[in-house]
Image (cartoon, rainbow, N blue to C red):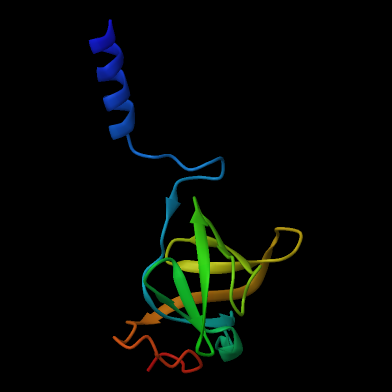
Length: 129
């Protein structure tokens, strides 16, 4: 009886941790992320460099040289501290689409534009080259 209970505890401890309701906890690709408003067939996208950021190790981001943290549960991406604290996005494929206060999608989208540099001082305001 004790052996069976011990085996059950060991198996449960080895099981993968599941996130709370909202989805599995994950991370997004490290690197520079540029944000823009989409264009259409006749106009190109409009860059919004004031919204750019870099994803760095430890579920963190940099914006304007200031570090913050983020949380990705399922496809919901939330900046939890730092200069963009409270900003929420939905992850659609490789793109982050900004959510408004009513949780509806807004026009702003952010895409990964390049690798992060070793010193984590990538030009957050620069667009992809």
